[in-house]
Image (cartoon, rainbow over the protein chains, first blue to last red):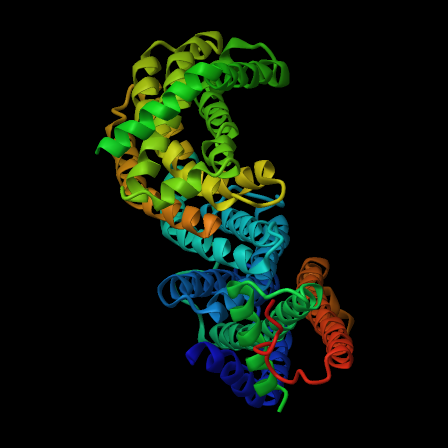
Length: 263
Length: 221
Length: 67
């Protein structure tokens, strides 16, 4: 029963929340952009380039947050075998990869005027680069199977393995970095952040979170649609023959939730 | 335990009968390492400076190259499905297969590494640490790689995919493996690095068989 | 106004950062929306075709013929 209920409940709930989240995200983005570009003071050390931080730091947070989310979905799919968890993980990956890539790009746009080079093998930037590789590996794996469900399951296992690995990678990169570049590199941000700079940072982070929610919901709907199309095509192909029990299950479940959702 | 030994012997016998696997891995390792002097020039100082990194990167790539075949042939001819049905725990069987993979690829690499170190003009002080580090590091590579090899079963373009999945996970082994040799070359104790590598090995020994077995069950179901 | 856009000489870096971020996020959103619309039309088509072929079938495939 809970297999039937969950996706339709998810769709109904998120459908009701959607307009509010969109409105909130638009407001937050406008407020965040105003504060980041106009309403915040110039940093005494970094000058105006500190404004890049208001994109860079929230994007980095989102990159990590999305990976944690994927790993949690992976754990849920492992424990409860719930198909929605796989779908959520799959829908999260492109958003996380985008934010991670943006972190790297804005980081190097900040680094060029501040450090004088586009790229420094700084511990944080390098860790983010490896995180991007993990995302790309996940996306490649998930899309490499003819059966999308099998791809999602393999992806969930990979996300979990990657999540165990992320702290180890972080630790080893920090260690490697201190060994090869004795702490001469300027640190991004600082130990203390002025409230006037913290506000745009947090507001942008919330705006990004809202954006993530919107794209996540849309991509989950897309994924459910595609599964349903696949199931219908299969049922069309094998019309005259009995449907294999596994496909049959999936079909019933997909049709069940969609019938509920279209109301 | 019997099942573990049985699968280990079976895989080793298969590898020995075909023979090509180990030889190819070592040949790949040697050829890749040889490319670097052509790329960066034959200056002895530069080569000695990058030797530890070059050897480790080549070893990583060589170990990765043979991963695809750990489960692929067994998956195609249905052996893997029979293994999942056997009364012995699949995790143990996976461990047996990983062990066989390490014996046929990791071990030859450890033997070939000092030869390449000589050719890259590495200082003698680093040889012992290089071999110890590889002795600890290569089993971890086989264990982590097995997860990737199991995940790609039934996927399109599995060979390229496995490298994309596994190489980022290999980075800690590379950092500490090369770091240990660097430390030894500088005359510092490499104990810290080797201990961390030991921790990585133990962690992968504890986690990898379960993850691999889980991925295999998904693939054959 | 000009001063605002030049950002103390760092304008190109700052505007490139904001522009690329906006571009990437909009592209992802538009691609998702387009995929969603395409899948929806495809789904509707399939459903009408299948419904025409089997008028008795309504919600589930439980009545799919056996043998």
